[in-house]
Length: 346
Image (cartoon, rainbow, N blue to C red; front, side):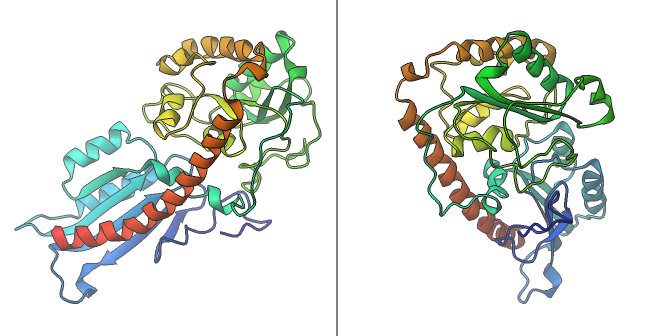
């Protein structure tokens, strides 16, 4: 996946393991392949066509894509176990209520929740052949890179400012709103308290070549508000939740309910001994922010040297991240095997 000046804000290729797939949408990052069974010798399947979708990006799939899948399902007939179309959808996003309804309504549609697909794009931006070591010391305790702000990120920035915590971290707030309604969260002047080359103040976009990297290194905690924060029914994590583990950081992320618990289920150490994750269980987003900010203040009072086995735990998280990327490769290769199974058994 090569990124050039024109398309560096988007995805322009599918993972190389998905042989024969085409890109449906360069922003959403969904790959598609149609397998015409009629052209396969010694056909043993009762399916005419298999339509395979692989959602490997960190944006939610669109309503238009769901409508397209419904059209395919509606074209499906079942007579003596004959399917005109069979649709398989692979994604790391928790299935929405709409997806669950489709599975109930159409026998020929299956949704496969595959968490490891979240690591598809990471390997195109990070050189895993170059060893990464943790910083020898921490000049500052945290980072809070609020480059594309929302009302919730404004709350985090205001908390840090009003409690005189800005100087303890690397903080940026560039007044780049995610959508017009977020302009209310602009501050009088863009703020940044460190040198930055990746995201100059005038840059309005979000180049993918930088999102998995940090512009600075010598800090420990990464405070972040996920892209999808609210009362959404479906959990979808972006690089904000994952990348700190690779760079030997401790992510303190607030997103939809269960964000941090989900990371723990993937095998990461989320440092429960020093962070109270009660906020992660709160379903109401307005009530979720206050206890999160309390934890932000609490960890900044910690003496980092007192955290039990800090360096070895950070290293284990780094290694776990690398293992998940390797496992993701195997998952991608397995999707074609899944298609073969579908053809032979339906």
